[in-house]
Image 1: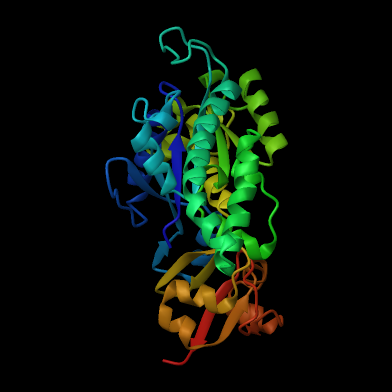
Image 2: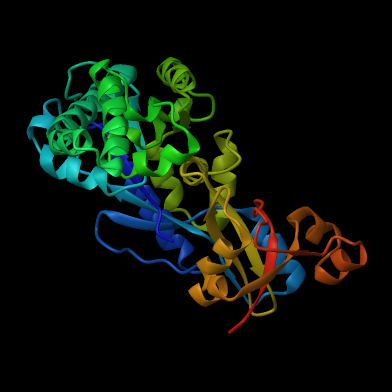
Length: 365
């Protein structure tokens, strides 16, 4: 399953530096994990998860294959992008193709690096980008709703439902609110998502701070954090310069360097996990002597859907899922111990997969 998180931001906020650090991290991971650079601006990165290492150690797995998330470095946006200013058209086209947005905000002062707006105001920067996306969404909807309205007035049921959803989004956008703030019933969520609105996508604010603020953040990042809380969004604090430096260090030197600046792990790890979580994803595992492998499914997925991630035949012929919770697998020191402790379960088609489940699927060929 290909999940894409687009990295966006105004020029000179550290977006490309951050992406370079991500791709260098991915290249470093390649020694142990499968990795591919699909295009110069696309990086496919392993999601850091210490659980898989522990599972592999118990099962004596010959190979470890983590789950992945794709980050896309999207062309810089400037005010007026919704009208095609700068690389506006390219920016908008690229952002429509991603599942979530990692919005890099400049939270540092540096006289040697100019700001496109002539000031350091990360909240204002976020609003600039959001406004351009809202304007583009509104223009698109107002154009598309005209033929839908005609069909709805003609009594077409599907058109009526679509017209209602489009009207709901338009009302929000005209109030200066992003489409993701719409109140939807469970049945409306998927057709609303299919409207393809950029401001409906979940947002992660990435606060790019100076090197001295990477552990605790600063006043700029605190303002962004407050904005994220008010919106129900998320934020992480990162120093793109430090991340780029860390990505180039040998593994033996990395931990010592991070400790010297008060960090337990690279900020990119937090960003990768936050992007994964932002997309509403969870991980289940398959474990054996050949490999320990992490698989990605959306929260709420049932056992047959999880089986289908491995192979479509597994979903079509699904019978049962042999399931052990991660903690039970660790406590039992493997499958045999979990069985002896009564923690081995056979789950059917209605079982909702839990994050960390260790699973083996029975199916008809």
